[in-house]
Image (cartoon, rainbow, N blue to C red):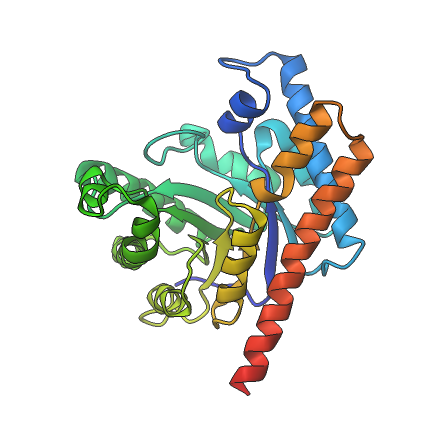
Length: 310
């Protein structure tokens, strides 16, 4: 059974690899050392924003980064030395189904950094390709069993993309899918994977618009004695207002302990800086502001929820 998390968790994730390389830089194929270093230096801007926010209001014991070994190895080491919680991905970037980033060598890479959390991003629709789902479940069970014997906790980022038939039933309305169907599918996926022996400590969940849906997700995550399992909200690249809405809804629900919001925090400041329209210092400051504001939103909404409950 899982070990769980006993604190709030405010993550700034920037473990994006393939999408960062192609959409931020326009580079395709294998990178040379100079390109790799340039992406790493850009990610350092995000990390500096994180550190600035932690020095200016975000509680250090709740602050965490999620970044990758390929471009962020030095950042992971520095954050750990500074006493921050860290998370690192185990999945290969940009795949339809879950595959280990380093294949059979995955354990050595996890142990080299010993992050607070080992994270996976998984696209899984229970109505989707059943053979693919079985393959994913088997690999994820293997990772889950490995992590249960290690210090690193297991963080599971769950994406439930719509199947073609599901969208057709909703006349192609993706918003209707998000609001009406996806919450039920998420609960089904959580239960399916648990039954397959996949036991995350933290479920990283796409934002939900209704408190009742958040409560159902927590109930699924914590069913059958999994009382210490927690949930956090991911940002999905949405605009600031929408992310604030999701955080406000989730923060009042026991079991939701924080968030992992990345692109909404760092993307626009980095693009503007790389275009030469603002200084590096300004980009760092804007990233810090956005991250700090999301932490404040969650803290305030959580306090309101506790007051209402008492």
